Every structure is written in C-alpha cells, then in structure tokens.
Length: 252
Image (cartoon, rainbow, N blue to C red; front, side, top):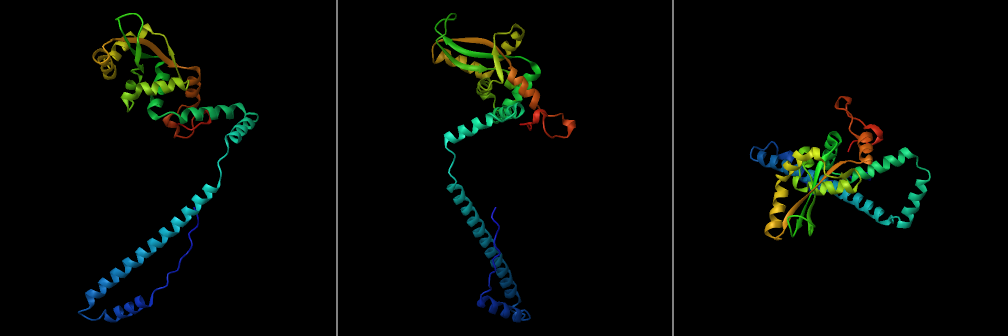
C-alpha cells in the first residue's frame, strides 16, 4: 500500500477569530452554553476534515495501483505453455506431486472433503443412478439422476441436495472410483431408497415422464490417487497443535 503523505491544514483566519472570541466569552454567564456548542461543532468539523483527507489519500493510492496493474499485460497462452514446459524439466517429483495435490484440493469444497474423509475411513459406500424405462425391466430410456449416495448424508454435508454434484466432481477429479454393486451394502441400498431426493425423482418419472423408474446400483471407493492424496495431506492429529499436514501441503 502506498505511503500516505502528511498533510498540514492551515487554520482559516475566520476560525482563528472565532476561537479568540470563544475564549473571551467563556467567562460570560449567558454565552457559556453557546461557547461549548461552538467548541463541539469545531471538533466535529476538524475530525470530519481529517477523515476526508485520509479518504482522498487512500483513493489516490488505490487509483495509482489500478493503473499499474492495467499497464501490466497478462502473459500470452504461448508464454504460459512455454513456462510450464520449462518447469517440467527442472521440477523434482516431490514438488510436482505437491502442485498436483494443490490443484486437486483447490477444486474441492468443505462438503466434498468431509465425504472424502468418511470414505477413507469406511472404504466403500453405495452409489446409485435413477433411470427411466418403458418397461419394468430391460433397457432404459434415460438416466434422470446420477451418482446419488448416502455418503453425503452420513458425512453431515451442509447441502444434501447437491450430493450427486459433489460425487460427480470427485469422480471426475480421480479421487473417487466407481465400482459394481456390492452385496455387503444391501442394507445401505435399501436406506438410500428412502432418501427424499431419490423418492422425488422416482415420482417424477412415474407422473411426468409416464415411465418406470429403475434404480441402478453401484459402489464407490477411494482411487489409488485419492488414497495417496488423503495419506499425504490429511490433517495432523489435534494434539499436534495444528501446523502443516504430512506431505508438505497445508490442510484444506
């Protein structure tokens, strides 16, 4: 931030005269109240003037900073690519892994990290798509809801309705990996059917689309990359007094 210049405000002669008159009138019984009011008004006016001058100085500094930034031309895409290629030849594996972890974590929100932490502990969770078909069995006509899971509810996410979006992004990032239906999750699939979002979607398929709702069952687990990311970046134990997580990447 630019250093503020010290501004000296010269007191106008009219104010000097009024101050002299006020000092002379302090002993007048009738004028005592008026003098105090004048002094209060004078103090307020000087404080207001000082605040305005500070504001003008700050605005001038911010304007100069904006002009400097506007003069700095952004790097062309070719320059960015050339810089990354040059870095790829001299960055060591640990630094490259650190940058990859940072890139992944920068695209995650707290709700997704909560889901990641729970899946790392559980190992596997149910994953379902809600499709629509012309017949109760056989081929489906469309998939209406994808990547629904009870993992978000169990993790205590704040936005329960957006668990499918969270899951889709985690799968796209390569942190999670989808698998086939898992028999050991039979009870959890049944509980997932009671989810409000799934029930609403299935009702819409029946009433609006005039089709049969079809539940497609899958499972989800941590990918090898997700396991490495969690192992290297998971928060340190609370007794450690905070600090940096293993692997050199601060906790998200």
